[in-house]
Length: 376
Image (cartoon, rainbow, N blue to C red; front, top):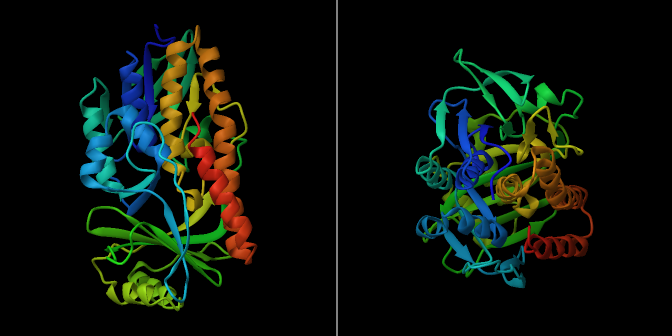
């Protein structure tokens, strides 16, 4: 099929923006990608992945590279916070032509894989540049850039993250991302040999999990309630995370706590959520990823949803008779799924911060994992 657009601008070079560039190029669409960071960097520790994310990796041609650098698993253990015994294993459905139902990888490693894939396409990548103004013109939108250049595009894809400048410019009435009263700590550790697969412990108002990021390394993630948004001094991150881990009776987690050091890449991030009502398009612009549905990490589905957006958008632009129909079809396919991810993640957060029903927590996890395995 002939796509309903010929030239597209992607604003943002993160996971969703890079996936959009790959898939739009595959559809025969001319793509410019602008990224404000001149070094095109991605910070962060590990990232947990669902089978649905691995399905996207297969779609965009990076699955084999992921397997060489990351780690895959089937199932997710719920572990006793005192004895370290496995209480039960949550199934993680294998989705499509992949070997695993879940996995993990370091964020910078995944970003490097995606960057290389983008470089193999005809995408015109411009670093250290972003848009400054968008003006509707006949048959398109004129974009002025921060380096003084300009261009006319059939469509602009806003993939510029939770603090999206494009959303602020064209959706000024939109609510700001909402702080959810919880923060997440992450660190890279040696993989504990007694663990067969990724797992999670819960104790009091804390939850900690561990996932593969390579054959020998794992990353831990720990959520803690923080009723108010505040700045934390990075120089104290290692000791603070160590103290949180030592609140668990678990001998394994105490051993991990003792192993933390300045090389553990300890990070802290306050958590925010956002779900923009439809329509997600306006004035020849459409939003994808965190720019339109930022979620907390409780379902490990943020990157998955963002990359799925890009895949679906390219499919609908290829199939539609005109741009309006393509954008409407994209929104209709994505809204309900993304609403489920944002709302279920937020409910899991509420249960954790309020000491709520752990049985409900498990039910939401299982139901959501099944929904994520469904076709997009």
